[in-house]
Amino acid sequence: MVTSVVVLASPAWAGTADTVRQAVAPDALEQIGGQPSAKDKQSFSAIFAAIDGKSWSEASKLIDAAPKGPLAHIARAELYLAAGSPKVEASQLQSLLNDAPWLPQAERLEKMASKRGASDLPIRPGTKRFSFLGSAPKRDLPDASPAAATLRDKLQVEIKADNPSGAESLLEAQASSLDIRALTELRYRVAWSYYIENDDANARRVAGVARAAGGEWGTQAEWVHALADWRLGDHKEAFASFDRVSRATDNEELKAAALFWSSRAAVAARQPQQVQPRLQAAARMQETFYGLLAAEALGMEPVASKTVRRTAPDWKQVTGTDNVRAAIALSAIGKNELADEALRHQARIGDERQHAALARLAGALNLPATQLWMGHYGPRGENLDPMARYPLPSWQPSGGWRIDPALVYAHTLQESAFRTSVISGAGARGLMQVKPTTAQEMARARGAYLSASDLDRPAVNLEYGQSYIEKLRDLNATGGLLPKVIAAYNAGPAPVTRWNNEIRDNGDPLLFIESIPYWETRGYVAIILRNYWMYEIQSGKNGGSMKGLAQYLWPTVPNQGRVSTVRMVRTSSHGGSIAAR
Image 1 (spheres, rainbow, N blue to C red):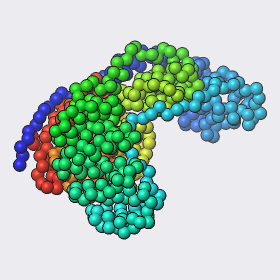
Image 2: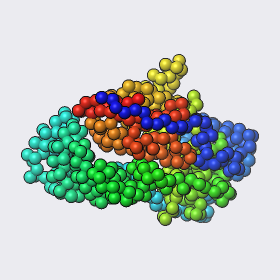
Image 3: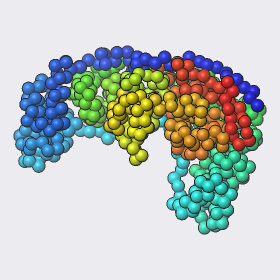
Image 4: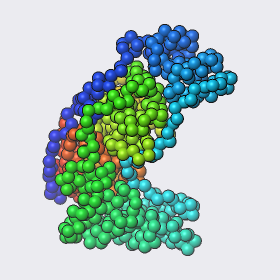
């Protein structure tokens, strides 16, 4: 019986390009300075077109006639190193290296010069070894046990056939031949199979045996036990199980999840004194899905929001270097790969105190992949703004923004890490990993032609990526509910249709997410929502989806600048919830 109603509808995004750019700085490009003149843009565009077109003589003449400076040095290096270009004499290479030892191509030019007899070459600036600065947390399974490989494959056949009891029988018949790690892993997998078949009693039973073995797989089994406890209404035991996971795991995302769910279980078990400490502990994990939800539940300002209150842009401390001057000019003429190379090289040879400024400059130049790389790699001990890992380029889809840019970029970050021309093994292309066949079908419906390579252009890829989100939003399978739309983007609409009837989530969006059968999709939904909220924080926006989920309501995909949240009610004993509107 339908007993619940719409809880709230809150204002969200009113889409303009300016909204997206506010997180870097208003008119950031104008503040940077060093932009080439219109004449220089035309000149160097012609030079690089000649190089790309293998018109070697024309390219050489144009470079000789071009204004001297870093961009001319980059162009000459590209000409000398281009496949099939005329042989360059040692004296020419030495002259270029003498003038520009800072070039990203300097090492290759030096090797070429040495092979051709050059001596007394200039000393190149030393390059620093970078450290990994960290990344946004995600849940990972422990490494699979090699000893379990053969039996794992056999169990998987039974699990895919929705036969966990068959998988358990097969496992226990060979249990004595397995080491404890392999046995614990496979028992976890059987327990999870029972759980996704809504057999919570058996899921808890098998998980209870597996968790007793301890170790990483034992912790995963404890998590399954906790979820089964929750669905069985044994909130006291659920609290204990979630709490044990929070203390046992080193994975930040899983720890935050366990802390959040233990607080939920504490409320249900009437242990209010246990709630706030666990939410506070989760909220300290500022880049996790559940950490952000915990902060929202407590009414706290997310820690990450404090990092976006920046002072005036600090471009001036880096714009005097040759690589940066070249990168600014290269970006202005659309040679983004070369601009990326120049900035990365400068980060390695320059003052390490300028690393953060270079990352922000990359963002302002609409080089999100460069910014993202600098957000992950840098000098040891660099305490970089976590927002460096969430680039916000001022791009626009060819048809303009119709979906909240924060949601689009949340997908882009996960799908391609902002690499514009990446192609997956399945043929999906570009920023949002759009399948050409899907995009071409949408293009034909508009009376337009689209080639697969068109998807390498940001404006086109974002257009068809957001169009696909709109298509998923409008399907009955998703009901426009944000977690289900995100799940469908990863797994496709057909699995979501099945899960609507199979997942016993009791109308709870967080339980739905945690009960998605596919490991990849389960993690994907949490990652996209986390990314989405980090982008909202960076832009100073609050669309209402985080607040809704913190209240265990279902947020919808923003529609005409508004996010609605709805309560779901159960319609069958095997899942099957509908939105009460």
